[in-house]
Amino acid sequence: MISLGAYHACVLPSEREASCWGVNTDGQVGSGRFGNPEFPGVIVGGLLFEQISLGFGHSCGLTEDGDAYCWGSNGGGILGTGMPGASAEPLLVTGNIRWLIVSGGGTHTCGVSDAMAAYCWGSNQTGQLGLRGLAPDCGGTCAATPQLVEAAFAVSTVTTGATHTCALTTDSVGYCWGSNADGQLGNGTLVSSPLPVLVQGGLRFKALDAGGNHTCGLLDDGTAFCWGRDDDGQLGAGLETQECAVTGAKCSTSPLAVETTRTFAAISAGGKHTCALTPDGTAHCWGNNRRGQLGNGEVFNVPVPQQVLGSNRLQSISAGEGHTCGVSADADVFCWGDNFRGQLGNGSGGFRFVEPQFILSLREQG
Image (cartoon, rainbow, N blue to C red; front, side, top):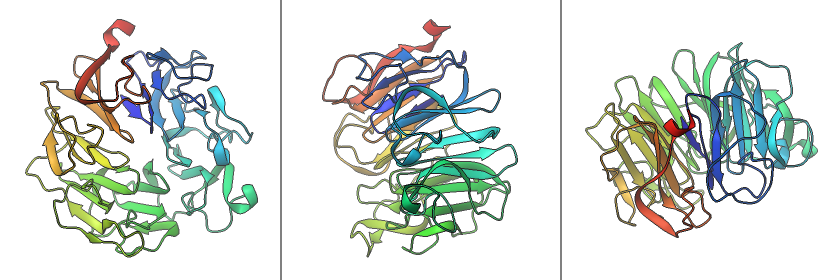
C-alpha cells in the first residue's frame, strides 16, 4: 500500500518495512534525522507495519500486534504520545489500546480500537476530535493523548481530512464531524459539529476517504459519491455544485454521484483533487491539476474523471496535496504531480511531472 501526506509519501511493501520520502522538516519520513532526503529511505527502528497513514506533516503506522506509532510534527499533540516536540523516529501512541485502524489528518489523528470504538487526538479547534466538551490540553483546544469519540455506534473504519473526520459504522453507514464550512460533513448544512452527524442520502458505503475539505465514498457496486468543497472540480460532479455561503467556493453539502459510467474499487481524496481505481487497476483522477497531479499530461483542472496516462495497472493509489502516487500490480511505485519539494522521490527536483514517473520497485526490497 501507499499513503501520501501533503508533501511526503510512504510505501509499505509486503515485507512490511516501510520506506518514505519527501519533505522532512519535522521528521515525518522517519529517517531518524531532519532534512529532506533525495531518495526513499527505510523508517528507522526496525518496526514492521501492517498499515500506514500520513497526515499533513506527520505519519503513523500500525503493527501486527495492534500498536500505533506516529512520528513527525507534533503540533497540538498530533503524535498521541502525551509529550511535546516533533520526532524523526516512530513513537508509541499512549493509552494501551489495541488498534485496528489509524488515520493521519491535517491537524489531528484518529484510530479504531479492537472494541470498534473511534478515538482521536491532536487539534480540536473545529471539533474534529468528536468530543462533547473541551479537549483536555492546550487550553481546551487539543488533546495530546487518544480521546474516545462520543459516538452511539460501533465503528469499522475512520478517515481524517484537513479539519474534519468521517467514519463508517459496522453497518456501512457514514458519519462525519468537525469543520463543515464547505459541506464536507455531508449532512445538508454548513454548520460545523463536534459530534458525529449522519451523512445524507441513506447510502451504504464500503469505503470513505476524507480529503482537504471534501469527502468521497464508494458503494458496494463501485459507484462513487463526493461532497464538500468543489472549487476545482474535486467532487467529480461536473457543473452540478453551487456556491457555498460560508467560504464563497463551490460546494455540495450532500453526496453527489461522480459523473462517470465507470465503477471503482478504491478511492483517495487529496487536497483539491481525487483519484480512484477501477476493478482492473486503471487509474482515474479529477479536480485540481495545476501541478499535473491528475497525470493526464496537462495542467488544467478537470471536473470529471479522466484516465491517468500510461498502461500501468495499479493495486493502490493515494492523492496528496498536489501530487499522486500508486503501486502497480508488479510492485512498482509511480508518482506524478508537484515535485517542487522533492515529494515524488525521484531525486530530480523537477518542478512538476504531468504523467507518471517510475520511482522504485518494491521487488528490489524483498
